[in-house]
Length: 417
Image (cartoon, rainbow, N blue to C red; front, side, top):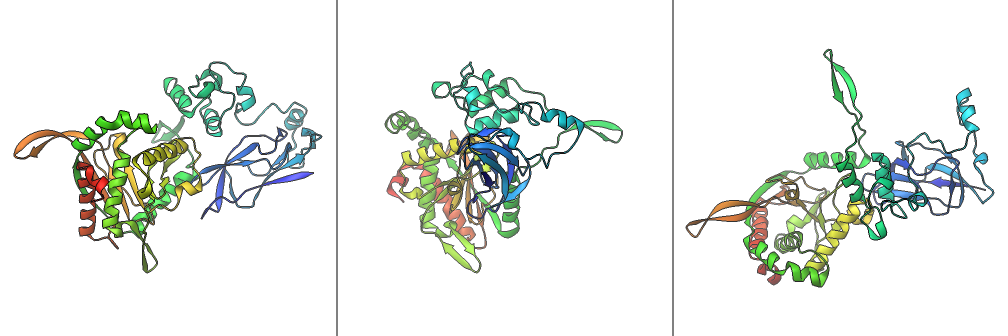
């Protein structure tokens, strides 16, 4: 009996996906719930699993093609008796070469082979007994043999960071195409944009076309915050099992400011302004597929350790491509930290339909006038981009001043003032 493989529901407001990679080929035996194909949407990457055990007899949609919810992806012939011979050949092209290949075993593949979890279990050099979907996809894309990479995870499990570190230590030459320009050959490389990158571009342009964006700046003296962090970071990590970073302080500071200036936590819906009386803070993080903004739910109810643990978990899942739609939707305000990449100053772009985004930047030692004397202080520029349609300049500046006050005097956060 044949079982159809269909595109499942993709999440809120998502109706299409791109076939990123087939993990099985026609004729391969599959087990129930085994990952068959990877779909890439404009927000997340998800896997479609086998509805039954048997043989993958048909792949209806190839890699790179766009599909919608409910579309047919392929078919599985159920049961142990199913075999590669049950594959329908009516769609294959007739040629003497292809006929000769049909008689051969199905070990030949038109795409680069992906190391299966079973094969990886017999490998050496720390190869794990199972490759996660994200690692499996990465080694296939990079053309890296997982046997050559030393795994740093539990029981030698291969992590995404291991593959990236191996690639950096042994860079493979890029394929270049010589394009004649004015009688000369100049190297170029053309790579198709992922659906996530296309969606990021659309949303950023949408924000520019829709909102009346304006950015205001201030600078923060990080002396007291750095001192508090140095004083408590060891005991904090020992007690809570999480690093004490800057994001928890800035998240708490933003919540103090949002409570005082509710327009920054609001959004425009038609002719209405919707004021959000909850604080779901988006934290922009970089992933291999582009910038994503997972959301800290009810951040005002989280402790410092709760914020740090949640951010760490979301960041790890973003790098491994394991964020869900629920993780990425419903934020009321966003914080982005370009300082981790060395940015000294920038004007962040709104994350629609939100009306405000705070940009953090690099901490830099600068001479400052303190009580009539020049002192060298660790300073950070902060920026608030806001929608001028509902937020006035006075409100925006006041918001940024409140954040500055809370960071320069962290006790204000605990007192909620």
